[in-house]
Length: 299
Ligand code: NDP
Image (tube, rainbow, N blue to C red):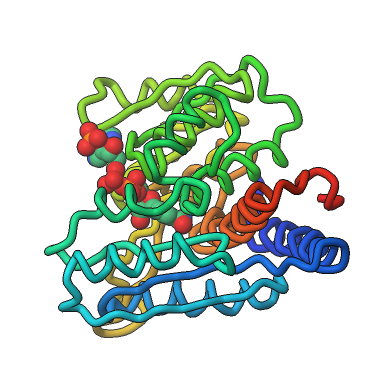
């Protein structure tokens, strides 16, 4: 069996289109334009690209995009002051501080200073608690995007065995919670897991969120499994020329697609879903802050 690639770009395009229609409804019936504020500290080149793309796609969805660029040597207190200012600003419905931030700042303190209702990254412990309790709150974007891809690939997840490799607060744990909500039987693996290959082989749904290039091999995947590769790793690519690099996931795509029923490629799989879910979260946050029933926007 040779599986199919899961086209994350197309799924993300569809989702952004639906968000835009709902934003148009919000503007027409409630005269509200959602506002997303993104704060970037320093000049990390990858972050610059992410922030630029977020800005473009926010505007395309009909939302207000606000960007705040702070120098690398900004003090933590100044960044926290900026976040509190945005918390108090009624025109801002969602706040995202682009990570990584400079080493002299505490990521956790920044996360905990953002109002949970404006925490469109879904990283505040209050939102993590809502997710773990099965209550509605802000769900982290990459896990949410991964769960959407899984649900759109397999119609009924109930009773399937989902194996999540990685247990970070950003990716692994929230994906596991979302799959549990879909009635999967969930196993979470990490760096101390024994017999990782055997555990992966028992998966109907395998999610890799590790950060090790092509860790998951073709013979780690059982026939017909759905494989979601969250990893983004830049590796050397001498075949493209001296000093050239390319992106790969945590999964050996060429090997895995021979056994799996469907696999997300890297790039073009989970990645594009992240911004689409950020826009969705901003819309959901705007509705909650204005006591508007999200479901009535025709989403
Ligand atoms: P972290 O480094 O925070 O977590 C990695 C996890 O992998 C940890 O739980 C770690 O275990 C586990 N791990 C490490 N080595 C092994 C191993 N040999 N076997 C099994 N488990 C292992 O990474 P993130 O969760 O933040 O990110 C994971 C990947 O996803 C990265 O490649 C990142 O770039 C990518 N990513 C992609 C996004 C997207 O938009 N597509 C967004 C965010 C991340 P332990 O806890 O024991 O240390």
